[in-house]
Image 1 (cartoon, rainbow, N blue to C red):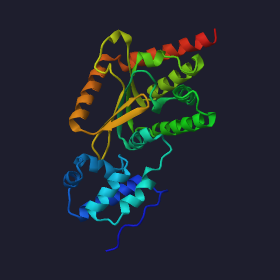
Image 2 (image 1 turned 180 degrees about the vertical axis):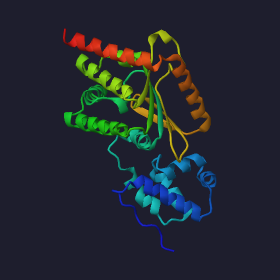
Image 3 (image 1 turned 60 degrees about the horizontal axis):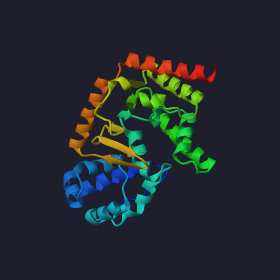
Image 4 (image 1 turned 60 degrees about the vertical axis):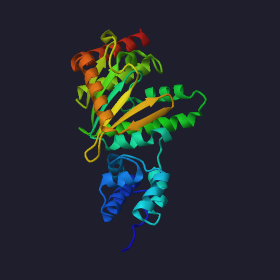
Length: 279
């Protein structure tokens, strides 16, 4: 039987690599759980690789070639699947976002990337690294704006954003930039493209005081939760952990303002920024 052909890097390499993994596993007569046990990972992790929601690391590709006897196929093609325009620590997240059917996100300090404007994204990127050349900042900003095009689809993914009031009041890029950013968010909410809630200062203590989180669901893969820190991030797929964080998100929703009151606050703040910019 002829072996698999090398992947074409221009044709969704992660998806093709995942399909080849599924075929190779099935040829060996292994379930996702059985293959995971041989590689000391969970069956859900194998499922995410097959669905293309996880990036295959070179060392793991080598182990797959050994266990599935694929003649170095995964090792050769792992590099093509890993090609990305995003920073290394964010590659898996960006790829997962693109395939998610639902995203639930709590943002304590910044407007989430998927609903940022170009001017706001540029100011955030510049603040991240004040010494980076202008052309690099432009490249990062273009990459972020490309991510926002996910919302061009009328319904997918479903995005439910709970924004802390601090994210709306932290002035990034100047008052004109903030006014534009908040009007953009309000527009998405008014078009029913996102579910928007604001967690007000008056809510006091809440279940996510320790930081941001993003929950992602998929049609054919287990859910993921994403945590982000200072120049660091991680994805988790442990079912118990994901369920725990889904409960935390539900608590935030219960503490947040209603959608109507949230929209009114966002629009009022946009007006405040506008009037203060242009008395």
